[in-house]
Image (cartoon, rainbow, N blue to C red; front, side):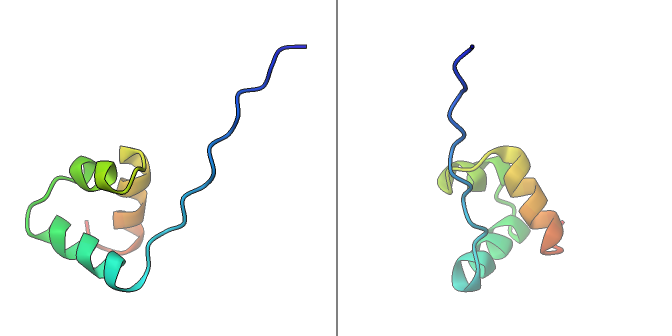
Length: 56
C-alpha cells in the first residue's frame, strides 16, 4: 500500500484587523501573491479569500 502524503493543516481565514489590512494592502496595489507569501498560504487560497471578501 503506498504511503499517503500528509495533508497540511488548513490555515484559518483571517478575520478582523488582519482581514482589513489584507484588503487595504491589496487595494493599494500589493500583489495577491506577495500577501499570500506573508500569510503562508497558496496564491489560489489568497485569491479565493480576496474574492470572497469582495476585494477584487
